[in-house]
Length: 219
Image 1 (cartoon, rainbow, N blue to C red):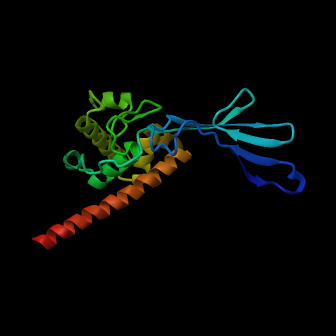
Image 2 (cartoon, rainbow, N blue to C red; image 1 turned 120 degrees about the vertical axis):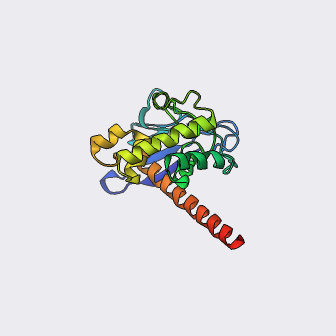
Image 3 (cartoon, rainbow, N blue to C red; image 1 turned 60 degrees about the vertical axis):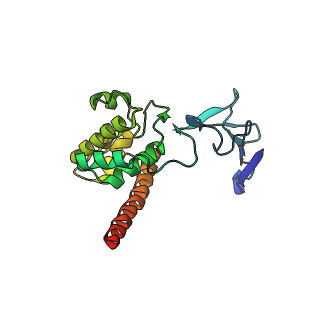
C-alpha cells in the first residue's frame, strides 16, 4: 500500500513524499507476534524528485532512522505479580516503590524474559556490564533483577542528588552521557523514555495513595 503524506507547493511543487507501508503475514501492531528488535526506515529520491520511505529496502535505499525496541509481547501483563519483590527491594534501598514499578513498566512491561537489541535483560533491563557490577548472576531471575535494578537506581539517585530527570536519563543512556551534556542528553529516545516513566510514576503513586486511603477507611 502506498500512502502520500503531503504534496509540497510553490517551487517545490514536483516534490512529493510518500510512505511505503509493507505488511507481511498476519502481523498487526505486534498483537500476535513479538515486536522486532529494531525499527529501521530507509529512503531514496527517484528521478521525478519523489522521496520514498520504506522499512523493507532494496539497493536504492539509504538508512535514515534506526530505533531500538525491546522484545516483548503486547497484551495483558500481570501488573501485580512482582509487587512483593518490588516493595521489598524499594524499602531495602529507600527507593520509591512507584518509581521502581514505573521503570519496570517502561523497560520490560513486566516481562522477565525481555531482551533489548543492545543486550539489556530482564524486568529492569540490566546491561551485562551493569549486572556484573551489581553481582546479578541471573538477570532473568525476577528477584535478582529487581534487586540489582533498584540498587542501580539508588546509586543514580545519590549521584544526581535526587534529580529524577537526570536519574532516568542516566538509567536509559548511561551516566556518562548525562555528564557529557551536563543535562538530559538530546536523544529523542531518552527524552521520550523519561516522560513515559514519569507518567507511570504518577499513576502508580496515585494507586498507592488510594490503597492507603482504603486501608484507613477499613480500620
